[in-house]
Image (tube, rainbow, N blue to C red; front, side):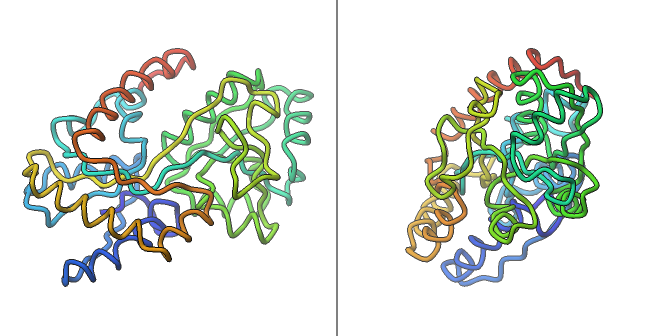
Length: 287
């Protein structure tokens, strides 16, 4: 289950990993895209599935943010899912629309400071929204969020110049960045990315303190037997270690995952605390 539309980062990660897993498992593995509500609609299907390993979820780090942006979730974030392992991790990029006149961070920041309230930023799910809100908060810019159902529709709007900037993962936008149809203006990491040395950090463009990574990870329904979770994780680690897969991940300015299920579950708990505090700081109320 990919709870976002085809063409976005989560879908890209799924199509990178799933065919290799299917070969290992000697079974057909179907990717089912169910976009909507920052991944909540598709996640609910997995939360209610049998914990037999035949229904799995590839979800973004919005999993640990949705409880603080959504008043009522149709599942319990911890109880109803079994964390298996992160697949890919990396920074979030502020992406500009050359057609709207924003091919550098300096141009956007200057225009936004000169015209408070005029400009918006697009987000694709609640991870990108939260990083965008942090960028707004730390930069002091008066910009408002426009939410999209996924990265693909947002990038279409950016490419057409209908919105000035948006936030998404570098792996999602890399081909557009290299083609020049969209430009990564800044990244939410503490230092510049090796694959994108020309792209400054958000701190460098006037938003100090924005140092947040995002992940795409594999979950099972709650109650998935620990031995089965470990076996699936081991197969994922083997796929991530394949030279061709690893090279593709690195080329997309991202890092491979592979954390064991118990360690990943502990990270989920810590991130729930972190994002609760960030949501409070940014003044975000559940809707």
